[in-house]
Length: 395
Ligand SMILES: Cc1ncc(COP(=O)(O)O)c(C=O)c1O
Image (cartoon, rainbow, N blue to C red; front, side, top):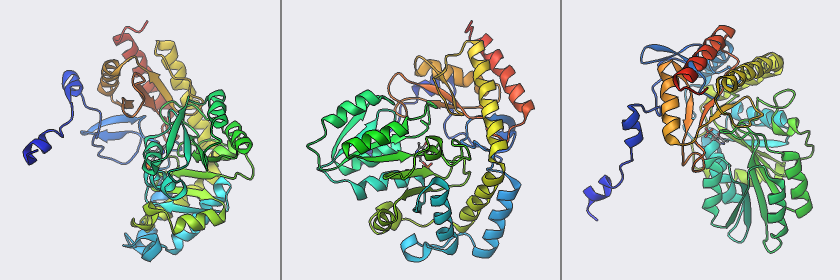
């Protein structure tokens, strides 16, 4: 194949964006995650970011980041195994581990990298990985890299998971992989039941708590606190770029396993460590969570209830989310594009999910209202949703 032909075969289909004269992806935000945010010089309500507790632009976090930049600079210019393992990183690894209920953790440059790397270190070709059908793309990528047998189980369906485990005796090692809070649905995994099934069938549970950490559990410690799971004997991963409002990913487990991963996980060993200011920002967020979680979380949940109540009353169909995520179910990508365009035209930023980010025919428009938004902003958003519903003639 000629080089020109190779490149021209790599173009993407933009017919939907062209048809609706609207492309919601890679939109260019000109401000921090404030209330409001700025896009093209216009004020927008941010219902798109994963800024659950509203701490991404908190003054105390910004201050901690500035102080750390002054003291430690922008980067350690090295991987954690070489020169990137600094005092801030080591302290934060311990603190995060304790926060979510483990002995140790390691911090990766991103949650995606943690999920992609962990399976390559743990699983072998002769193993079986059973994974929730709705699991995040980073888990699916990670699992595929192993090259072992992979079986999806129906979303949160314990009967189906049991059936697959009953047929898994021939495999050397079996892993059961799921998310805690499903990022597009807002559903929550019955993880206590999954852990019990894993114990019964000697399988290893792997949980991605990216949308649970800082969000669920009485004090924001995520899925293990939420489901009251003690002595968890499995693997825990999470993104630090959502409720914890910074960047990076973590893996937590028992100490020996973390020690093994420290020397075997390619996504950790071969990638530059997080910059010092980010680590300091995360410490600041954990301090705020410790003091203010109940206030922030009450606001986050109240906003979620107001938004979902208003959308249902206005005729939108929602997914059955139990988390502070509100997702409108749409019939197809066309409806998704039209609805997202109308919402965007009224200056609300939301996230449209279309395949391959979600399974075929399961497009959605997702909203997360962070605790930084004011009551007035939420009121304004509700009025806009009622107006959009009238424009779409939903009732
Ligand atoms: C469930 C889940 N896991 C992992 C990731 C990846 O995390 P990060 O953005 O830190 O790479 C995301 C982010 O999109 C996510 O939603």
